[in-house]
Length: 386
Image (cartoon, rainbow, N blue to C red; front, side):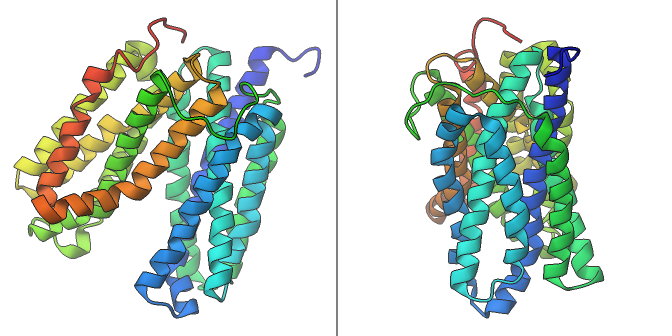
């Protein structure tokens, strides 16, 4: 820091770097989705084998998360974010040329590891920046991940439709990542986060509650992603070709909610955001499951996304305010449990639906979201720090 550079200016610059980190992670992750059909055709594998290969991405993320919190505590979030971003840049083109199941699985494992480590580090960094500037920022950070995902998927789809050469197209997208990381790296804080300890610590105290709520929110997102289209198409409300509107409306509403989430949180506080978001999501489930009108049913997905939009950023904020565990360990726990919710949750919903039906399973999700208002005061730090 130069003698004339003030702490607020450094933190403001670090806020921009955090937003770019979230954007880069979402952008890189979404760039992979349009490449999946090309990868399957290139390898000549069936759907089951491709599904197993896709598990490598989640496995790599989880394994990296187990170490990322410890690395951030020891060396700070900055080198982990930079290493993760540059790794995404280097690995993305490999996903377009891997020609055997082994090479694609290994590439996805590394790609998932870069995403997972970056996910933990940028949330730790975001917590530090938010605390330094003493105002809510986490919703805006998470909104950039969603925005990056929209732009990444859109750009890669456009490039593949214009010029269907996956390797060349991924090089262009990797260039976007390189530019973003070039702007990000020098603006990141160099401070460490928390105390050096084990690679992973089981959540305890308020962190246990925060992690459980994070798992629930990611479970709902995974259920809407994997089962939302089937829910509305199997009942004949929406044609199969338009089933994707369910998750699209959910994701758009979540992004919009997060873009205004920081101002809302500053105005009404964390307790009200958590309780109100839970109630709004419950209302979305009720609308979705009780009004058999296509437009209204789809609006239910939007209400669920809008209600859920600011809860996960709020949980990360509370992880940074609690003193039961080091910040790095708490953020790692939230991220791991959240990933477990989005990876394992859809399978659990499918298992439950096998016995009680998909609609009843979604009623169960709505009931679980109804717990949020009752947990609001227990999941927030009584003293208002922000």
